[in-house]
Length: 258
Image (cartoon, rainbow, N blue to C red):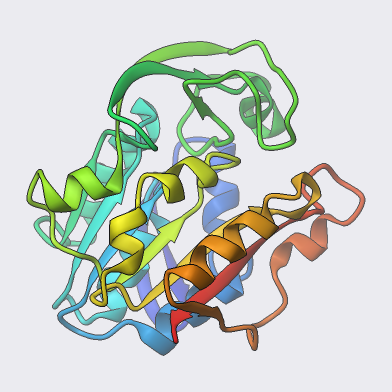
């Protein structure tokens, strides 16, 4: 079913078939206000954006429209059902050729490894049905963002590629903006982007951080050494709504080149 959502004045179409997708559409404007605000502040027509962990494409679509259809969005989503809906939603909004979906995992090394589909990401809304819109899947590991082992609902083999190889060996452009939201895999994405993080063409980035795992100290050190400083005056992250749940210690943080 095709649904239209209005997000900060922009009409966006989504093909909605699952409860997970419906929830994403219903919370489009409210779930991550800091992500939308980051794009509103910093994205300009002509910019290039890497969306690492694009899911069904919500923020890829918003970015392309916020840049007035005059920028490029490379949308990385390895999970097959999400990737299919990412393509479908891109086409529905007339953004083919502007939002460019890539069905690969971004990681720290070049490798083929299992993409392990997390059962909780499915059970939350669709009673274990294998549907698009779910998340928390893990590339090359069965340990989730909390550091807990899980038994995969399904296993999909996937190619993992570091950002540095994509940009400096395989011909992708240097992005002006980078979003990393991969449910606990963020450290590996950063580890594979050492050269990119130091590239002056990369102006801003957003990273989802699980503070309860203590990873933020290494993230902040890595980004400071690459020349970034946190921009902290953003709306409260929606994860505050999840106080008392397993997601309570997770939040997005935005960094700009100092």
